[in-house]
Image (cartoon, rainbow, N blue to C red; front, side):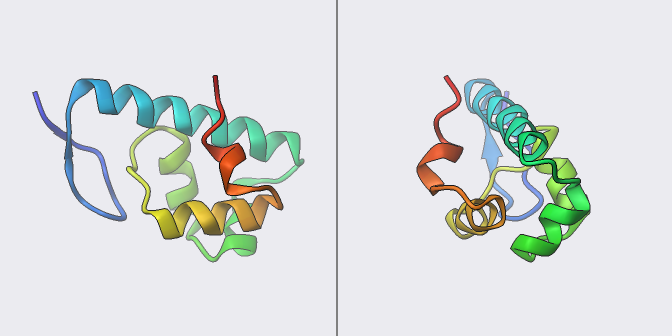
Length: 86
C-alpha cells in the first residue's frame, strides 16, 4: 500500500519508507530537544514553518534535501548527524 505522507515534496511512499520517515522524525525531535529548542525556535532558525517542523517530527513529511540542510543549519549540526539515528 502506498501512502502520501509529504507536505513539502508530495510523493507516494510504501510502508518500509514510512518507517524510515517516522524514525527520522523521532530523531529530529530528540536533536531539537537536546538543543533546548522549541519547534517555533527551530523554525525561525531554519526558515521552515513551525507547523511543518511538527509534521516532520510526527513522520508526516518526506523531506527534501534542501529542508534537511536547513534543519541542520538551524540545529547547528552537520547534515550527516540528521541521518545517523541508529
